[in-house]
Picture 1 (cartoon, rainbow, N blue to C red):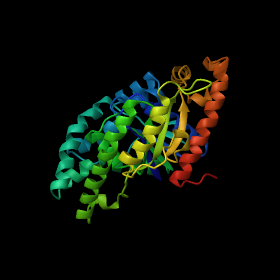
Picture 2: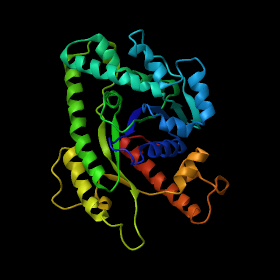
Picture 3: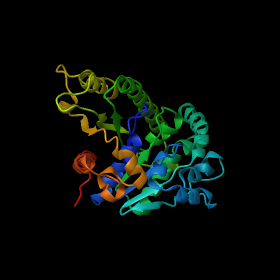
Picture 4: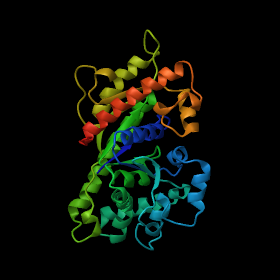
Length: 333
C-alpha cells in the first residue's frame, strides 16, 4: 500500500477537488483507494457525501465512523485508536469522513510531538503515531492499494502527524506569487519535520508498538499547476513569469537542489506532473452532482462547450492517474 497527499499550505489551489477526482480516476483503473479526511473543515467529506448521510454518521452514536471518533481515545489518554468503519462511496473507493472536532487534537499533537524529541515517552509516541496507525487500520480493512489523505492548508501539528503517515506528497500550485511563497514555506518545513522524526526513530523504537509501523518519508513526487488559464493565442498576463519562477523554486525549496542553469517552464519541467485547466463552470456542477468532473453528463446540467470540456478533462485525468501510478510503483492489470 502506498499513501499520498496533495499538500500545500496555500489555500485556494484546489487540493480537495484534485483529491476527489484523482481518487475516482484511480478507482476507475481498478486500484483500491481509501480517502481519509484529516481536514477539520471536512470539505472532502461534504463532496463525497450529502448532508443527510453525513449527519447520520455524525449523530449515530458510534465512534468508529469518523477520523475524530477513531482518534478520540488517544486524544483523551483513555485507550487506543479504534478500527474505522469506512463508507463505501464507489466501486473500489472508500472514505473515512472527518469531523469538525478534529481541531481539538491539534494542541495535543503539538505538545506530545515536542516530548518525542526530548525523551523516550510512550504517551507522546502513541499520540504522534495515532494517525499513522489509523491509516494502516483503514488500509488493511479493505486491502487498499492507495491511501489518499485530505489535509487543510496549514503547517500545524495535525498536518505534521498526517505527513508522518504518508509516503509521498504532490504539491498543487497556481501560477501566482502566493504559490511561489508557499513553496518557500513548505519545503524547509518538510525537511525539518523529516529530520526531527528521523531523530526519534534513530533513538530507537525497539519493543514499542510503533516499531511495526512502516517508516514514511513523505517524499515529493512533483507538483501540479491548477487553474492554468490561457487565451487562444498566448498565456494570460504574468503567466510566463511564474512558469519560470516556480520550477526553479520547487527545486530550490522543496528538493533542496540548485535550480537548473536553463530556465525551465512548466511544460518542460520533469517535476511538473500536470497542467490542469480551470474548469470554472464545471466544478460547482460536479459538486452538486457529487461526481468527478470527467463523469458529468448532460443530465447533470452540462451543455454546449462544456461537453467537450468534460471529454478533455477525462483524458487529462486519465493521464494524471497513469503518471501517478507509475511514480508510485503500482502496476495496474
